[in-house]
Amino acid sequence: MPFILLSAVCALFVSCTNDLKDVMALPKNELSPSQIGDTVTMIYTDSSQLKVMLKANRMLVFEKNVSEPFKILPNGFFVTFFEDDKISATLKANYGVQYDVSKKMEAKYAVEVVNRDGTKLETEKLIWNELTKKIYTNAFVKITTETEIITGVGMESNQDFTKYQLKKIVATLQLKDDE
Image 1 (tube, rainbow, N blue to C red):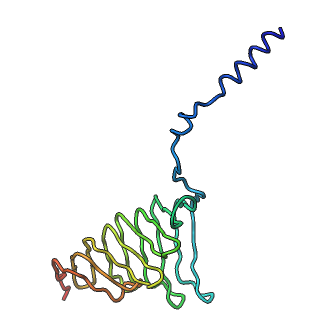
Image 2: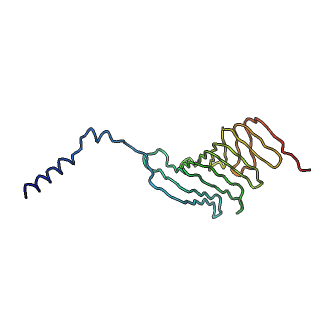
Image 3: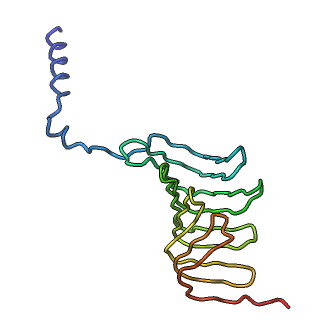
């Protein structure tokens, strides 16, 4: 009986050794989130005034082994911008990446911005710079107002999307007047 127990213990120690080559072949610096959140709401204030509210179904936070900490919003997000406690614009997209140091957010896939007047911007990629309070893109854009639809490539605007400029206008379509 003691011989069987001793044999089992020896077999256990022998089977638990790792070859140095196998250990060295393991992936190094695998990028994995340090935090994961579901049904996330983030609020940004300035002098106790609500400025921005971000809601996301899922947020992955990456802080380790990266040059700049960032957050990924893989299942879409919705941002509400406020001015004087009133909604000034909304931004939604199917995917987003928010960079902590540079204070930029990249929105991708079915991006839509709507300002307080109902003017709507649609594109596939948009950058929001929190420091300059600007949104911009070099991608194709479609802007729909009460009176026209404008398509173009490249656009820059304030974050409230009330003052915008297209880099290259492709087409302008006047909408039918009901008069």
